[in-house]
Image (tube, rainbow, N blue to C red; front, side, top):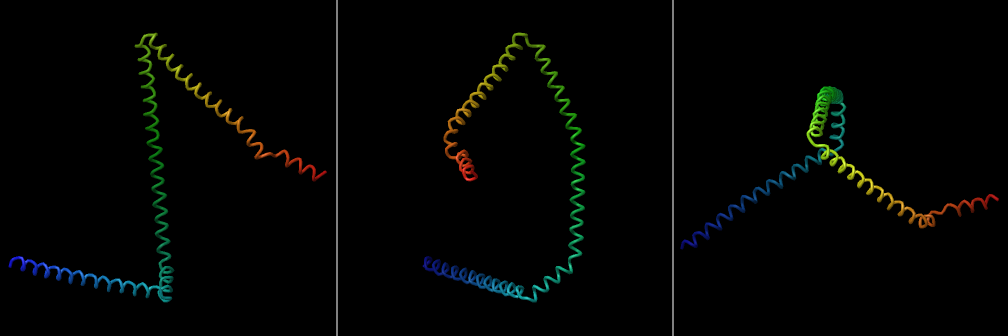
Length: 172
């Protein structure tokens, strides 16, 4: 008996939900139809003329807004430029102080380290730069070899000499 009652109540609940969703769907369809009708009315010739008249009527107002916008942009740019220049001086001073601090720290390191350590670090830096230079020279050599190997192939494709000879024959 309880199973039958739950089954009947379930059907009733489903039917009510179905009816509610059906009403919502019909209302949404009606709203869509109204929107379509309004859009169709707006597309008429009369509405286009009215819209053109309204834009002409509001032209002065729009012009004022544009002038305000231009003035606001000019003021903003002016303030940003002045702030940049003001902070640039502070940044330059900070960089100069950091440069002096780095120099003094390097001088302290040099004075505190022994001569052998100092020259050892110098030797390490010199060898690193020499290795980088050797790598650079090797890549330059590779590109030179590639250019030399492509020269005969490209000269056959883009050979200008026979064309010049043919032009000279025509003029003789």
